[in-house]
Amino acid sequence: MEILILAAGKSSRIYKNIKTHKCLIKINNQTLIKRIVNISNSEKTIKKIHIVTGFLTNKIKNELKSYKINFIKNPLFKKKDMVHSIKLGLNKINDNVIISYSDVFYSKRLLHKIIKNMGKKIILPVNKRWLQIWNIRKKDPFLDCETLKYNNKLELKEIGNKIKNIKDVNGQFMGLIFIPKNELIKFKNLINKNKKKNIQTTELINILIKNNIKIKVLESRDFWYEFDDYEDIKNFRKF
Image 1 (spheres, rainbow, N blue to C red):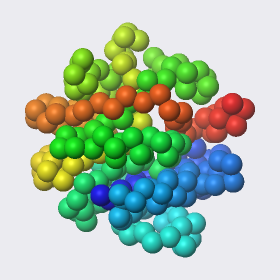
Image 2: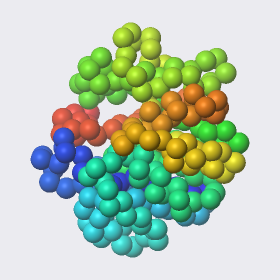
Image 3: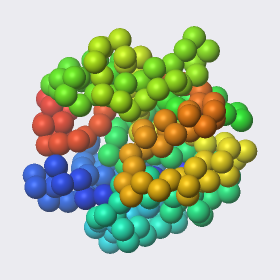
Image 4: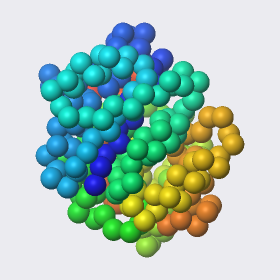
């Protein structure tokens, strides 16, 4: 088992306020990325940590200089979206892998739950307390939230589209996805076949669904939070 952490983009919306990389935001005197690395190291199943960098690579490396990490450089981070980082990272991996965003705050228990439930299907953790988190963030779901629908068998049916009704949201994507070794080649092939210059992670997941690749939803009620802009930092600290 390996973990691939995505930390290449600049995140312009928040940079003007923090003047550093989003993954270097400190929560309780620990940066987000160091927290994720520490949580990963606490799981004996995870044998290798990969981090895709682009913007402020040296700062991220310096923050993690005491850890054993395989850093992967994304030279096109200014031009391409996160899926390009996923592509570069997966080129170095041929094992079960968890892909993780680096600008999210999640619990050790969540990562352990993913590992405990891993099998031969892709797993997508879903935040069932998402409305509470949006209230903490003081955000309007209709402005930025995306659809996420799954059936009674916990099979994902749709993700990443603009919502028209709050019922279109059965939960929220948490910036984590587990890819079993047996699905890795299909996953890589679909990324490589994509002709679109820029593609979001949720768009990629929809492509998987359209290609009849089963994605198992893993429901979670653990605390989770994302940092998109400076207001998210201020509201988190107030909370």
